[in-house]
Length: 305
Image (cartoon, rainbow, N blue to C red; front, top):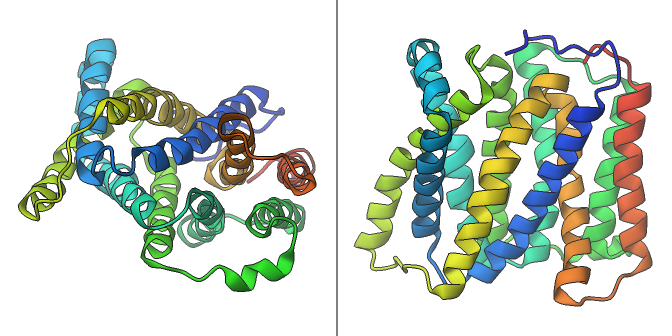
C-alpha cells in the first residue's frame, strides 16, 4: 500500500477512470435496490451478497490473503470495524432505505457523503480543503442539488426526511467513516484486504439476519431477486469496491470523495436509458456541474491533498 501521502506528482488518470467506473456501478445499485423491493428482504440480500463475494474472493485471491494474513491479523480490530460499518452497516441501511423511500431520494442523499468525508479527513488527518477544492466540492454538490430539484431550487423545501431518508443519511455517514479509515488500512494488497473485509462483513451480517428472521421479515430471493443479487455482487460489490480502494490509495479520501457526487447524476442518466424516463436539460446541467467540479478540484486544486 502507498504511504499516507498519495503520490500526486502527476495527474492520476488511471485513478480517475477507476473512480468514475465505481460511481457508475454504484449508480446502478440504486436501480437494482429499488428493483429488489418485494423480491428479497434487506438482510437476506446483505448476507447473500457478502457471502458470495467472500467465496469468490477466496477462490481468486487466497494466496494473497495467506501472504497478507500476518499484517491483517495485527490490525484485525480496524478491519472488522471497517467491514461492519462500511460494508454491513452501510448496505443494511441502504437496502432498508430502499424499502421506504424513492430511488431518486436514494441517489440524492448519497451526495451528502463527500461532505462527511471531507469533515472526517480534516478531523482525523488535518487535511486542508483549500479554496479551489472547496469550489469544486460546491459545484459537484450543485450538480446533486440540480438532480434533486429537477432544475427548480424551490423543490428543496418539499424533500422531507422519512424513515428511508434518515436511514440513507446514516448509511452515508457510515461509508464516509469507512472511506476516511482507508487511509490507515494495513499495508497489504488490495485483493487480500478486500477479501478479509468481505469475510468480516459476512460474519457481522449474521446477527442482523437472525433478527430479521426472528421478526418473520426474511424473504428469500425470487427469480428477479437473484438477478438483483447477481448485479450487486459483481458490480457494486466486487469491481466497485476494489476500484474504490485503489482510487483512494492513489489520490486520498478527500479527492476521491468528489467522484461520489457522480452517483446521483449517473443514476438519473440510467433512469433515462433503462427506465425510459425523458432526458431533461437539468440532467445535462447536473452532469456538467459534477464533472466540472471534479476537474477543477483535480487539475487546479494543487497536489498535496
